[in-house]
Image 1 (cartoon, rainbow, N blue to C red):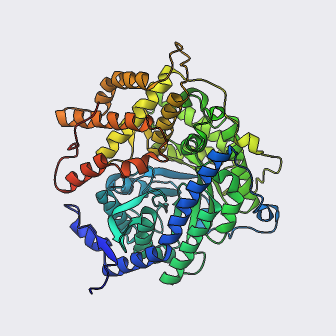
Image 2: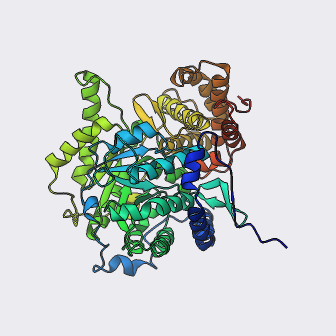
Image 3: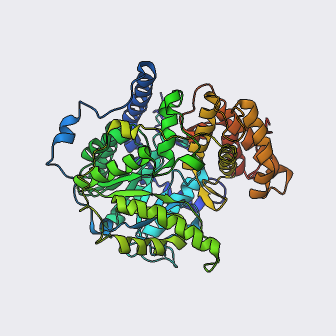
Length: 554
């Protein structure tokens, strides 16, 4: 009998043969195989735990609260997270949604005055085989100082590497007959090729961890870090990670998450759209959790979001950890002397000043032109490298505060906007892009998640429009989808039949998602397992055009 095959790897996409050979070395493949073998069963367990927890909430009708079992962790005032290295002490402005497969923007960001870069293999990235290889290779080049027009890694903004979340798998690689968890694939290759060099240059390795739902998931990541440090000969605590609190359930376990990662913590991060979408994910079928129109009624000033940010800042600073805010998605107009430029900058300034006054130690921007104005804003309204001295002891945040849905209804504008964003995101994925620009903002999987979540929920609860009392139904959403297609053809620059067909396919896929009886947990998981998306990427890798997709249903 022949020996069992422990790893299978698809060949290189066309044009990436040199990058493929650089990343997929014998040593890195052995390392990844050992990493996956060590933790694959634990990954399956935490994913099953998510399902079990959701099922319990559905069957019992219970609401989340602060866990009684972990009360001793929360009530013990003595513990702190280990202090972060010097380069993480001042994190006023990071660049967000930086997909490293975009070489030009990646180099521009490396040369920017930002304190950090969110090197994104998750929300702002479409995880095609091409993009993953190109992205890891570009990080490799940056860390090995191979970009001639970029600063050395020790002088560049720190790389905050963001692997995919636990819901994503890597289809092009199997270990012991199973597809590899996406985050282990990204983390493993990045650590093998870059971890030691980043540590030696006092510039890492630092990570963002997406969509963590419980302290058990933080414990798993901590064990992965310990295993990796031992395997690569790095001191315990070398790896640092900022956990993105993007789920309503994890908001009740922030102290426990810090506690599990206390040797490896670089703090917690709060955003708005993934977090808001998680309410639909966990409670969307309940009428009490009907989320109103995000374009009119949902912002960080609302009680449920403000309480979440306040609790995150208080929790982090009490435990000696950094607390960071979300990303400003607005794009600045080119003409700096124009009224639209001043209005856009004033809008970002107002929203980010709220976060600074709440005590955050930093936040993200997409537009590189916002880096310096936002750094100046921090200097004007805070003191020192961070705001960890602001303990926010005056605050008391209750479960009711965290679960209080804002008042408001649904507008025709908001419904059409959500439809447009959802379709454009799927269209972007069919082109192999992880984010796109629409009406002066960058949109990524986070805004796509809240958009399709709201449309699904409004159909489910047959919500009335404020404008004319029409009920949101499958028929109305289909009718409005056809209405917005003219604008979307202009936005996506549809010039050929193939490009128009791809957009129609995206619209049909969007309608399919929002009409499902059971809410698909993640749009990205749904797409990553969808035949239309996978076949479109396969044709690209075989040398076909990006628009070669099956005929639309719409």
